[in-house]
Amino acid sequence: MKLNKVGLLFLLFVFCVLSACNKVGTGTDNNKHSLSIYLVKDLSVEEAMSMNIDELPLETLPVLTDNEIEKYNWGEHTFYIKNGFNIEGKLEGKVPLNGRPFVFLIDGKRIYLGSFWNMLSSLHWSNIPTINSVWSGEFTENKYHIAKANEQQDPREDKRIFETLKSLGKLE
Image (cartoon, rainbow, N blue to C red):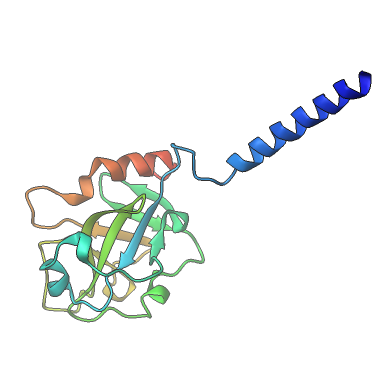
């Protein structure tokens, strides 16, 4: 009889351990969010702007994720990347004069279309947010600014972005 109780307790212990292990890494944590920026594949900024955001083809890997962001200043929409990370490297070292479109995603959902921009360009798409980088002379201390678009409603102000940055501890 004593062996049966020990055996039952052992089985109960194993069941509890296995149940806990199955929950680890399943993404069931509702408080964990993700932020990423993907380049639009094989389209110019102008072409991307003419399409529905949900129909834009995206590159396989992101150019930036929340893992590479050190902090984000919500009031200025400026973010700082972690030391050792290089956005330019992921952009293959350059942005064409007509820009490079990207899509800003939260938890895999497309939030807005933007573009990486080369300040040497005389072209400018003021209808979407832009990020200027090293080649523009704006770069200091891993700092990047997402410039506002000339739209009445600013897509950078989306509440989902704020809540995600807050939950990730990235807000400055």
